[in-house]
Figure 1 (spheres, rainbow, N blue to C red):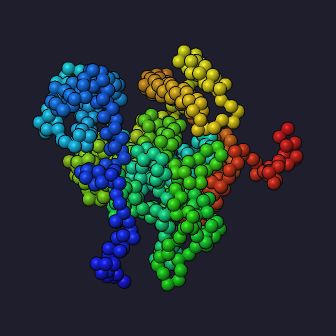
Figure 2 (figure 1 turned 90 degrees about the horizontal axis):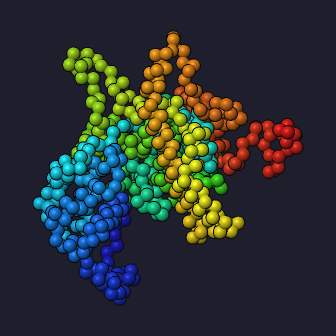
Figure 3 (figure 1 turned 30 degrees about the vertical axis):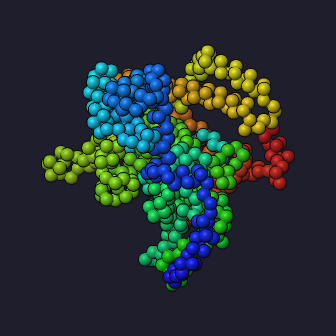
Length: 586
């Protein structure tokens, strides 16, 4: 059916009904007269604001009048980049690197163009960039080094998920956190997406924009032997720079693999069942009855209307899983980094490192550009490509078949992993931390702030927020102390291990400390976790008895809101513990 043809009178009437002839305010008239600027993504806007503040701080430090902005001369901006270099610490060296300062300068050029609606002269932009790479670098002794591009590989992914389910003793507010981390890791490994494409981006804080059930399609596809398999298609509509373009969505397929620990569909099904999101297939028992209808080669399940806009990954607290609040990138990042630390990784396991690992695996440049959302290979070459040549050069030279397995290990973030790394400060160092004057002052201020807060405080009150800031400040100090302790341990671990090996006779490793995880000691008290840990490493299809058993245990964990673990034969009856169970414990 085509569009309805309208007469001129009908077109005018339709426009009027839609508000066209409404009297415009003076603000609306002024807005129409303004030149419309090119759309900027949220992340770029944040960087523009940051670099604008840096420039204003520079002017204040120099006691320079704002009118000097109109001069646009190289001398002013050379002075600005020198101020930037000397007014902050770097991540690699004490001062920022040449690469960081050049990036800041180009961000400022973009900010200036939007703020003043006029571009800086090309010779000024080029002159300042050359000054940073030349005279400024030599005068301040700036480093040209970039951070190491360690990749998260498939081996690292297996290590993280295996540790999460088979060794991790971390007490999450709710076991759904464990499922969400597993699904997120597998989603990023399947898509190469940025964090903001899956959860609420830090650049779009408060928008609640994240992958929702309406972005996910569960397909049942018939196999050649008459059976069927599950496929999960995820539509990425929150891509960087393309959030407002509905035609630029990217769709990726997640397979229901035979390796259960790599089966993202399994973890997704668990969350969907817990959220009661499937239409007609509300429970696990009903979902397992789903089949491809006779006469069809595929069938797509549908969602309930009330579940369409619900984020798949959501915030979790001690009160349970939030019904609609999307998981934030900051929360997911902290959970993954903390998991990596507990698993023994020296470097932070970052979502962007998974993205880089995916990029380095894709050989076809066209597919890589599509998956990564990049217009050219220049971005990949500069920011994603591993510096280690992933080819056995001598094997090529000598016409032999060479293996690149060990080269991939060296590219991986996992080759610096050590399961013996400390997970926390020692008792002595904890005592020293609490004795620090800065920490004692914070404890005093927290105590004073607590005394001013009523018993049931309003979490939005100024007093409550002020105390939370103090807690955050103390937490950051503790995190810094732990990071320093771990790095000190890693730095001295070679000498200690070398001496141990030279003094050791035979192959006995009894002198090595054993991993600190308590899960192997208590797993028998958590039957679901115990069964999952035993079955997760088994190569079985999701529709097998073993796969369905794991799915059932995952659902039980995801639905269970209890904060206390009970033995299977000692669970409360109607919310009340039995006297026999209490007598057994006493």
